[in-house]
Image 1 (cartoon, helix red, strand yellow):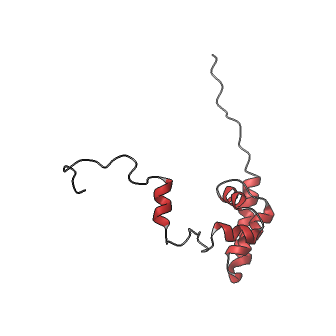
Image 2 (cartoon, rainbow, N blue to C red):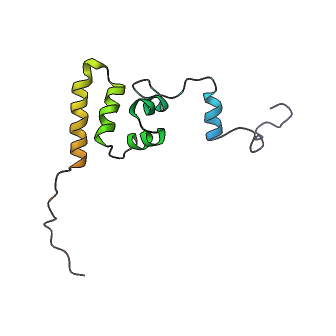
Image 3 (cartoon, rainbow, N blue to C red):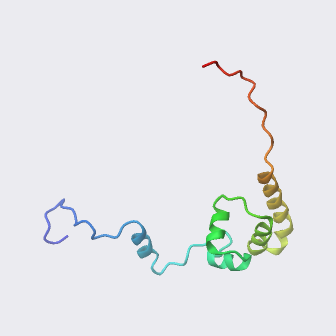
Length: 111
């Protein structure tokens, strides 16, 4: 910076950081999108859920069957759709019905 001694730091708050920096960096960039090339807003409209619901369901919550079917229809090309839907529904079934685990066979230590 002109007029400042070498090694001096800029005043706090002169550079945007965090969310403001990301917003500034996005400026003219295309909106973020997933592997299908569709934005969250577009997917939300196509599957019939709000953006926040789609974000939550894609972020880890186990989705309802209808969401899975609609998401596959919205993101997978027609030639692959039947196979991908079957795979997605199998994963959903596995998530909804996890295998039973055996109780521990180790005896408890007396306290």
